[in-house]
Image 1 (cartoon, rainbow, N blue to C red):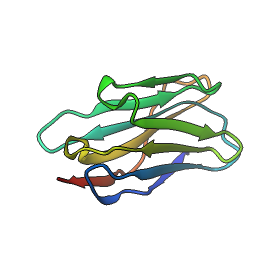
Image 2 (tube, rainbow, N blue to C red):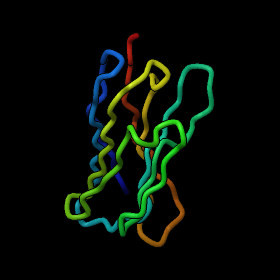
Image 3 (tube, rainbow, N blue to C red):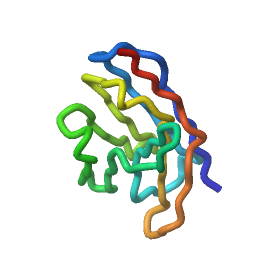
Image 4 (tube, helix red, strand yellow):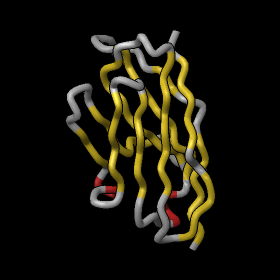
Amino acid sequence: QVQLVESGGGLVQAGGSLRLSCAASPNSLSLGYMGWYRQAPGKQRELVASIGRLGITNYADSVKGRFTISRDNAKNTMYLQMNSLKPEDTAVYYCNVRRYGSTFDYWGQGTQVTVSS
């Protein structure tokens, strides 16, 4: 069983920065795909950024140039550095991971990010 613990959300003013973390356990896991998703009130959950085991990344157009996704395979941890935050980035952010070679999705509990104007 995979357990995910997210941290780093909070309230920030527009133009500010936050760093989200998602730690997966147990540490013996071999993880493949990892991604950050977000869901704003009244909207569908959407992909923010994803990263493969070898570090290939993909970003939503709305965050390109502002957000950076990274991972530490030794720690089974994924990060999302969010800079130049905008009020429209306000949402609950969820981490999503798959075991290496599997398509089964595991989801974190979500962390709230609120950007004030």
